[in-house]
Length: 161
Image (cartoon, rainbow, N blue to C red; front, top):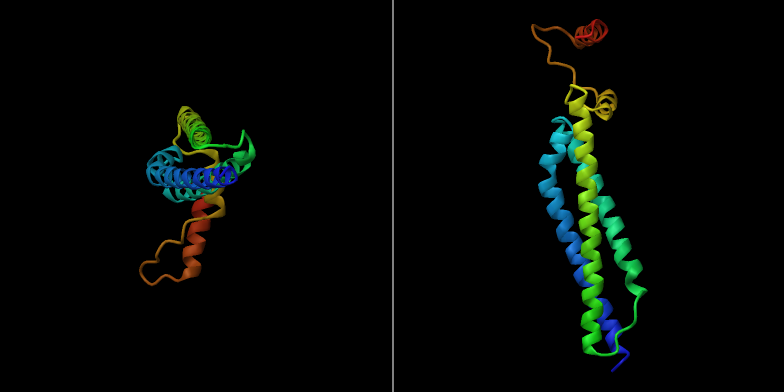
């Protein structure tokens, strides 16, 4: 019976840990959007992109941690040790998830405060984003052609409007 305790315990640990990681990632993704939109000065497209990248990194770090620490610790030899082993491992996963969550909040809070203290709600990385993703050309009115619209945009950029 000894040989089955570690295998079953590992399986239970992996299922619980991955399920918790997925649940936390989805919750943070869904509810963190508002915070990120505010942190990025109202740029929803950039906030959504960063939010998705944060979730990918969150999965990689947490599932990597879960699978790496699997082998550490004394292997359980009875039911009580199996429960203690699983509880300890899942508890460590929860602590790591919590630390990562508060670290992300701290970083984005500092970035938001820095942007607001500069007297503007727009951050430097948004300037780079807008440069690489310029807005679409405005619709032309009165039958003006596309070339005229592009010239107007160039003139506005040069004049600083």
